[in-house]
Length: 255
Ligand code: ADP
Ligand code: MG
Image 1: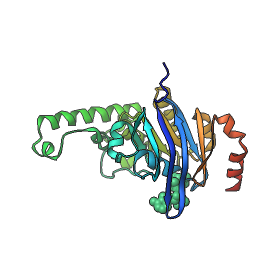
Image 2: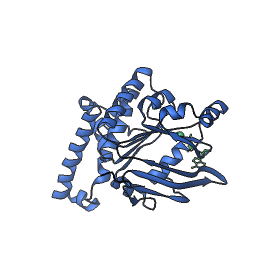
Image 3: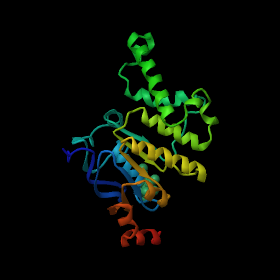
Image 4: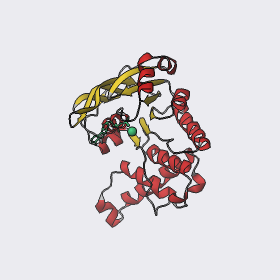
């Protein structure tokens, strides 16, 4: 049976910076397994919306539910444990670390042993280290970077670096994966590769929210698209509905 509370529900989210609304009364729902595009001109409030979902930005109004449970009062690390994973816009690697180590940093977010366990290298700590390594290797394989595990992360071409960021997010076994402009700055062939990876993750049933500047890419991938302009949700529908929506056309022509 269809569970209407499953997935991600945003209800009446608002966030002001100074007197200006970065997000104003944003409401929509993302179904489990859906790939939801989020588009809008620069400054529309897209990254702020992701921050509200991940917890890195506090909502001043509104409610966020994941599979029926409120998460909007939880700090970011607890939302991460509930399955909210984010690849930030312009996310940086840890230089001086290998590809595998960069991904393992993400896997650490799920562990339970503390600093004392680590200091005394308790059995629990060692078991978790093995699990982290296995999770990181699995995530690297999933994004096609298994052969790069031992390389210095900064040696990777930019397209592979973005895959690494996605792998790091996947170690959290996300119920919702937030990708903020993952294709920005990539060459055309690298964008195509990344588009293929995102499509594979979608085919595997991962629920994805994708902010992307390239409207053609979003249109090709998304089940539905939410359009923000000046902090407001001005349209929400299938790619075909969005393409012919007068408010969307006006927002893009006006920018
Ligand atoms: P987008 O990702 O769509 O380009 P943002 O969410 O980054 O838009 O920004 C939306 C608006 O909120 C912009 O006007 C931006 O200047 C403002 N803003 C975002 N973050 C902050 C912040 N931490 N402090 C002040 N203003 C912010
Ligand atoms: Mg942004």
